[in-house]
Length: 187
Image (cartoon, rainbow, N blue to C red; front, side, top):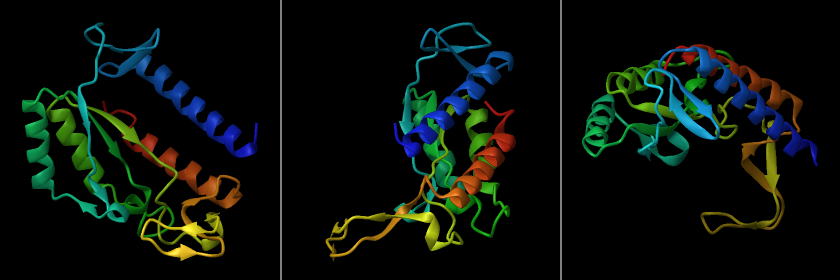
């Protein structure tokens, strides 16, 4: 097993373990029992009926207004959605500098979802790091044609940071710790 895969597996296991143990004791959170989601309050199985939704992600060209986000949530509820899968985009939240966070959009998102009893399945990815990251933190693509049709005859910089880069791992550890601390009491 290579080190990158081991790091990803360990990180996922720790996050999963934290999430399941925390949800088991906090009212209103989902828990996982026998491989299924259960609502801690009702004691009933929870089957997600939701939508994957991009909110604030400049690399993908997506930037919702709060009014549009609220309208979309209302429409999702009308369609029977009880959950939403969203990205908490690192580049957006920590764009002002190291440990200088802008939480307003994500705080609004959590608040609006909780008002409508919509559960959030958040992706807190390793991709889309802040623009202030040094180039040395990024992986390199092999020679190939990129998504825009440009042929790169040499290795070229990826938009994904390197799992084996100690500085990148340390920054990601800080990032995910801050997100979890910020929203640990939110459903």
